[in-house]
Image (tube, chains in turn orange, red):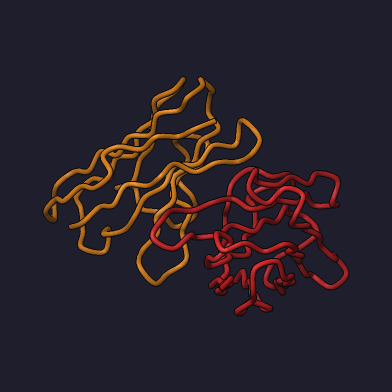
Length: 105
Length: 119
């Protein structure tokens, strides 16, 4: 299954809202996650099962969607939110990531 | 605190082999699936292989199937990746990753990663 993320890159200001999209080539339900990958660091799980926040992830991060279209929303952007964000599905083998969206604050 | 420490990376020539290891601590290793995920230079993340809590569920990404073998030793709290027939496009930073669950699902905790360069 292919995951297509859009936009490829996004530049926003502190305090604004970011909306990142992930479109799947086949429909599935619930089994999607989002990760944040800052330069020089290891990736971090943000959201799993579409909308469940991982431990320690602030409420500014939220996920939604179903079928083929999924969204990661980041409210009240902070400079530290600058990173590449990936979606990932676990519904089909092999596990796959989207190509990523680069967010610059 | 979950700690995952990878070792065994380095520079190899095309066609050679390499074995990566990951030492885990800070959680009940037997209870979780484990994975190897790589970050390709200038590109994104790619899932390489995953193994369930008792090695009953093993799967590979399309680009490594038949060349790489994932394994685990629960008594040693260790994860391994045996890589054969290495190619230039296997050059990447490889991460040892702890799953959220006992069977492969999501990548909950990540090691620092290590570099594998095929050149």
